[in-house]
Every structure is written in structure tokens, then in C-alpha cells.
Length: 97
Image (cartoon, rainbow, N blue to C red):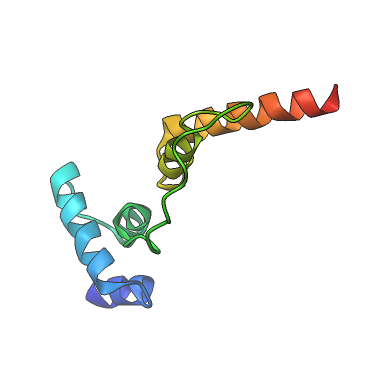
């Protein structure tokens, strides 16, 4: 069994694998499979790096708070991603007219 886990998780960040096992223990009463751990890894991987701060204030036709919204979307917040997609759709419609 250990060999199967070792083969399937080979090349993954060891700290992320440890965090995935810990997360699985907190969220499930079942024994994990490699598939369970692989599914949890995206939530446990360290972030690639910090993003520089974007301007937070806007004037004129700019969208106030867009920098904060983009930062949240880049960090993976679903609500922020949806808001950015809505802004993009709105902007694209305005360009076509």
C-alpha cells in the first residue's frame, strides 16, 4: 500500500502532501486513497508567490476597488472571480457597440 502512495505522489511537494493528509483527516472519517490526497493537493500547495499590490483607488472611468477585487480573484476567491468575469463581459459588450 505504501508503494502505491509513493508512486502516485512521487514528485509532489512533501509539505503539501503532509498538509493534504492532515486536511483529509479533518474532513473525512474514511481511510484515504491516493486519489483523495491528489484531489486535496491543489488546496494544500504553497502559493507561487506574492502578487504586488494593485492600485486601490480609481478616478474618472476607472473602477474603484478593482485592484482589491483582482487581488482576491488571483488568490482564487470564487466570488471575486465571478465579479471580474462580469466586469469583463460588461466591458466587451461596451466595446462592440
